[in-house]
Amino acid sequence: MVYLFLAEGFEEVEAITPFDYLKRAGFNVKTIGVGGEKIKGSHNLEVTADLTLEDFNETLKEEDLIILPGGLKGTENLYNNEKVLKYVKEAASMASIAAICAAPSILGKLGLLKKIKACCYPGFEKFLEEAEISNENVTLSKNIITSKGAGTAQQFSFKIIEYLTNKNKAEEIEKEVQWKV
View (cartoon, helix red, strand yellow):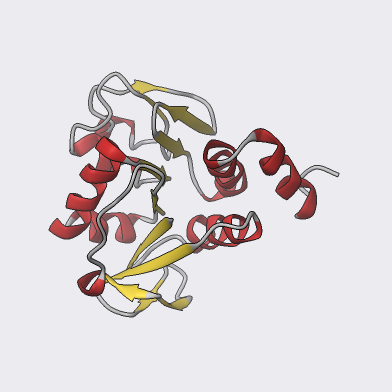
């Protein structure tokens, strides 16, 4: 199961692109609304989440993955929620996690990037405490996928698909959406 956490101010492209591409790849993706059922993105796109965080009481399994989209306000709202942080720590230790743009800073502040290769939106590297900073657009290290920002949302999505399945499935979706023709 893939859980996409959405907090007020999330960056729309960084949430909708992985949602769409993972659904195309056959994954069950659940949106989790942090702060309510209707969540507005950084550019005022309103999304109705599948579940509110208050109603979300899952025990993560090894095959699960949590996605944290960025957006400055969205990242702050994710970081300021204790239940989100509980799930982020759980995912990092026993499942998998993917964070893009400013959201990798959450992982860094929680000390989850020690000796992990990671990237983020330029200027947020100072929050990736003890990480090995990568210049790649998307970085996979152990069970953590990080990416730079809205412009890398497609690459981020393909890397998640490849990580959860295989390169062939990722390439199939790349062709379907005309990333590679």
